[in-house]
Each structure stands twice: as C-alpha cells, then as structure tokens.
Length: 404
Image (tube, rainbow, N blue to C red; front, side):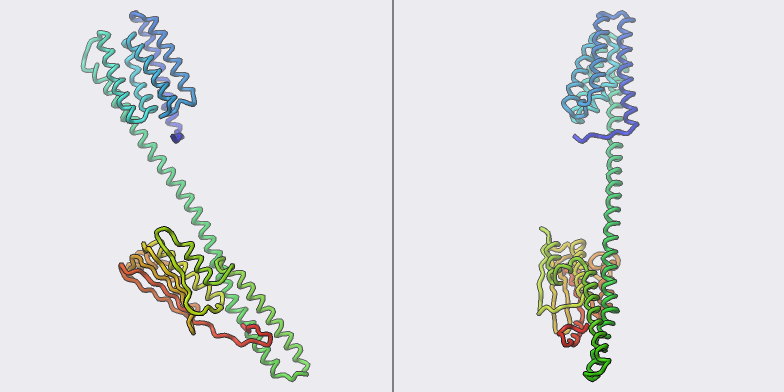
C-alpha cells in the first residue's frame, strides 16, 4: 500500500484521538471505582491493559492502515473493550474513538460493518447493565458512528484532492522544464541552420565568384606574365577558403544530416515515427543528385513538420514520404490517410498543417525560390509537397573541383 504523507493538521488530529481514548479510558476506570460497581478491580485492571496495548500499537511502525499488524492490533483493542464493556457501562463512551480507529485502519468495505457492530455492542451493554432506556440510548452511539464515518470520508476526499493537485503541480513543473529544454534545443538548431544558410549564401558564394573571376583573369594573361603567378595564388587561396567555408557549413547542418545523405535522414525519420497504430514508409524517385545544405535542411524540416502534424492531429494509419529528383527540381511529399481538414478549420484551430508549421514551411520554400502546396479534404487525408528548383551546376576548374 502506498504510504501517505500526512500534513501537520492530521498529526494534530491523531494526538487528539490518542488523548480522547486514553481520557475516556481513565474516566471509565475512575467511575468504576467511585460508583462501587461489581468487579471494579477487574475493570481497572482491564482498563490498564487496554491502555498499554493501545500505547504499544500507537508506537509500533508496523501498525499502518490496511495492514495485518493494524488489523490484529485493532482486534486486540476490540476484545479488551468488550470485556471492559461487560464490567462497566461507562466503557461504552470508548466506542466513539474506536469508530475512528476502525475507519482509519480497515478498508472501507470492512470498516463500515465493524463500526455498525461496535455501535450495536455499545447499545446492548447499556441495556444489559439495566440502565434507564431512552431515545438517546439508541441515538447516541448511532449518531457518533454517523459523525465518525462522515468525518473520515470527508478527510479522505480532501486528502485525495490535495494529492491530485500536488501531482498536477509536479507534472506542470516537469513539463515546463522539458518545454524549456526543447525550446533551447530548437533555438540552437534554428541558429545553426541560419548560420549555415547565411554562410552559404554570402561567404561561400562570394568566394566562388572571386574564384571564377580570378580564373578568367588567369586565362587572359600571357603565360609568362609576372602577374599570373599572383593571380594563380589568389585563386588557390580563394579555392582553399571556399573548401573551408563548405566544411564549416557542413558542421552546422542538422544532426540528422551529419551522418548520411538526405535520403538516409528521411528513411530514419520514417522508421523513427512508425508506431503500432501508424505505418510510415519512405521512397526515392529519380536519380539522386547532391544538393546544397540549405536545400537538404529545408526538405528535411518540411518532412519533419508535416509528419509531426500527421502524428498529432491526423489520426492516420498510413503515411508516405517521397523524395523525388526531377530534371530541374527536387521535391518531398508527405501523404497520409487521416481525417483531413478544410483551410478554414486548419487556420482557426491549428490542427492539420495549420498553426505555426505551415507558415514556417512556406517561408522556407520562398527563401529558396520554391513552392509549398497543401491538399486536403475532410475524410480524404492530407498531402504536403515542397518543390525546390535545382541549382544550376557551376563549371569546374582544371582540378575538377566545383567553383561554387
């Protein structure tokens, strides 16, 4: 059984219960002596034994709710109380603290019948001792039992609600930490992609242009011209720095593209996303060609975003990623057989490919001169396609390396 962590208020209530039971026990012993009831000595002795057993059980760590030790301790208390009840009619007042012990230590299906038996025993003892019978004789023990049951049930309900709120708060704190980590990771990856794109579009392209111009100047100079040596060295320096810029761009590419090609990254994405309820397949169409890093990043990120929407919103059973290499363009298509959506519902609810994912995909497409198309209808699935124009191949120099 899960051990409860009781607040200070509950500890104070337990102390009050201990004081109440021991006080009533002492009162029963004193009245047995003062009223000169038969067997007063035996009543005092039983009261002393009952007090010792109660104190021992209250101090034993093994006595816990819904445990065998707790049930045995409660049984011993009940047996001693019944003996004291036979010896002294004043022992019936101990029924009230016993109600709370029974409700606390026993499971609810067992505690309610035991409380009822305890109340019946208290009423019966009052009748057996020949005390004057009145309506209070029956109402007192029954009312005490009802108050005890209501109090314990109310406390348990409040405790469960408090525990539920505590778990929700812990989950919220954990979720906030995970979200912060995810945002930091996403920010780092976005900055890496931005730097790679900027370096490719500015530094690398500038060095490529310088190399082309120096090569053209080298060809126009006579072979024995003094300046040709300097022009060749300048072209070689530009070529070396272009290669370094390319290595730097590759170092800033997304982790999925670091250990393989775009096709391999998309295949890993489909395998990683496949679950028992969703089958994701991947296919390549056409002859693969080497793509610039910004192209690979845009195609991979678009596939990831579209597939994430499929998993979260589409309720699809099958999805397919297709990487197509054509004569003048390259495209990635993500098609699923999910619920589909209308343009209005996607924009208003953020489901499907709506929300922030669609503008981001369109922005990537525009930055590279491509197009993004989204086709969907309710009950007919969704198809997302990013098409980018293939960059024109640059001429090669005498060493056979690309000039760009």
